Length: 255
Image 1 (cartoon, one colour):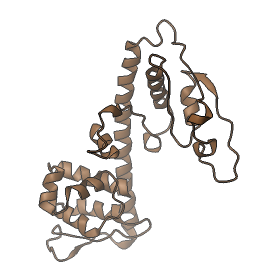
Image 2 (cartoon, one colour; image 1 turned 135 degrees about the vertical axis):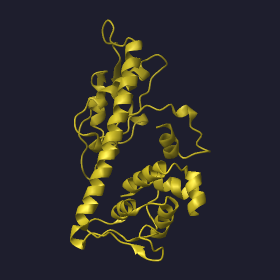
Image 3 (cartoon, rainbow, N blue to C red; image 1 turned 90 degrees about the horizontal axis):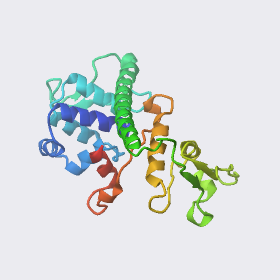
């Protein structure tokens, strides 16, 4: 619900042509709160705060219904949102449909948000794939034959415990993991890490960047809708100032 609400609020704000600062000035809600809500970092959404944002955006009945549906817990009726959309600022806004049809409204809104997420993820995947495919071609990684870049597992003193890598509960023995491979096998090895964490180490010119690019392209070649799988993106974290902005906010701005 947190991500869906943030996406919906950001879309409505963009449609209204407002910046976060302008919406904060109109609503009285701090820019920090708006930013946390839109990026999904806020988990305790106060109904009063959402009402203030809805009024600041001058939302109509349908938009308020969408907000109410996203705020509603599963298998419950949408939470009434107060506002001026129904012509009475002192009366709570309530969906016009009968209670029996409310789960359908919630389902429709959730499906719409899912479609938006899937579309955005697919567009991002296409752009990432286009960029790094071109980079790989310019580096002539496969011309006239694939570069013989190989990898091996780092020494135990540099790695986490296998139980942590595989996210195992206490008492469960870890499965054997691949110990070596080449460019063609790095993505398969990575998919075997439930933690989703992989560090590529090596000297300058050893092929770390080549391997990272190939990993991204192979992961993009997976199957399934993008709403159910991750889109790999390469960032140069050397430009991130940890003292000025949170990592998530910095990544969101770059995307």
